[in-house]
Length: 341
Image (cartoon, rainbow, N blue to C red):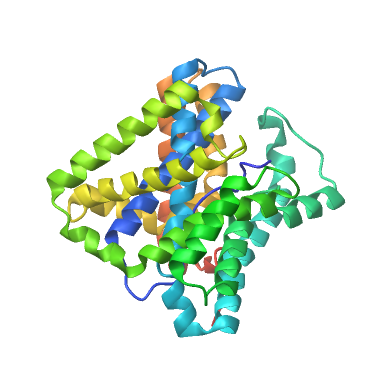
């Protein structure tokens, strides 16, 4: 159940839009969808071997941290403009509200799609409520909310001190207790990192393209080499967590360097368009992903690795993105944020 609602929104409020941020979100959300498709394939025995495993771990080292980092970029400005009470209310409406709505929607739809999953389960209200409350049903949004409340509570600290304390806490925190608790400790450091950078992210545009390309290549090559040699212990959940913290920051930096390379190009515009719909893709992707996989199996009668990976990923990205961008016309905005007049 933990991958039903996992990873990506942010920044939710920002005074100005950064194309690079939208590109990073676009790349990261496609990686999220692709990872979930690949996990479904692995569970069915269609994908195996060490290289796919290493790629899976490599992607997980940075695509989750990247979402928390971008959520922190404009957090300080949002808090200064809104004040603590309005800031908290905004996060309740834009983070926890869609989480609860989609938990209920998934529970309502689950009986109709359970037979298509590898491990169907029976609905129990008490178990459902416990999963929702603990973040076990889908941890990203409640953890993001908690991370931002931690940022609110520590706002008067110097930014560097907040980051230092968050990094130390993340490095020492074991995977123990409620999921929402220990993952909040892990990922607060990336929100704090985003707050340190803040609006300076706009200076990325002045970086020479050749330097951005060279640095991105070096970062990702070194990161994948380390992951390939060490494997799972570089992820969160394998104490001590220092590898995961460090690779989360370096991988996020690599994504921003890639964004610099394609910013102001047609390709960059496509990724930015996708990134602006990342919340909608995140929430809706499991349904078109699963449906496309079943169509390929039942109608095309194929378990071909590339077809089963690329087609569901494309459909589960593009269809929710189209719906997201038409939400006002379709009058479904209430699915993604608190209804307003």
